[in-house]
Length: 150
Image (cartoon, rainbow, N blue to C red; front, top):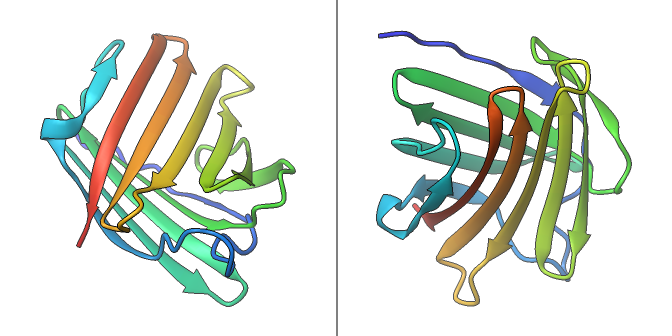
C-alpha cells in the first residue's frame, strides 16, 4: 500500500470563543452524506480531532483517498491573516469566522496548490459540514463532507 504522510504545523489563534460554535472533539466522516467531484477526490476515511492548546486550537485531519493517506496537523489563530505553514508542505494559511462558519484558505507548492475550506456546525452540535474547493496542478475538485461527533 502506498502511503504518504504530510504534516503541517501552523499558527492560527482561538477558534472557540463564547459566541462561536464549539468545534472541539473528534469527528468521523459519514460517507453516505458526501458529495465529491474532481480527480481522485472521494475519500474512504476522514477523521478530524480538534482540541484546545493554550490560547490556540489544535486540529489534526487524517484523510485516506485510495492508497494514499494524508495527515495535516495545525495550531489555529482565526485572525484572517496569512501565516506560514511549517513542515514538509510549507505554504501559508489564514482562518477567520464568517458568522458560524470557520473559513480557511491555504496555499502551498510555490502557489500552485490552493484550498478553500468552510466548516459549519449543525444546530444540534452533532455534525460538521466541511465544504472544500481545491485547485491543484492535477485539476480542481469540490467536496462536501459530513462528519459526525464521536
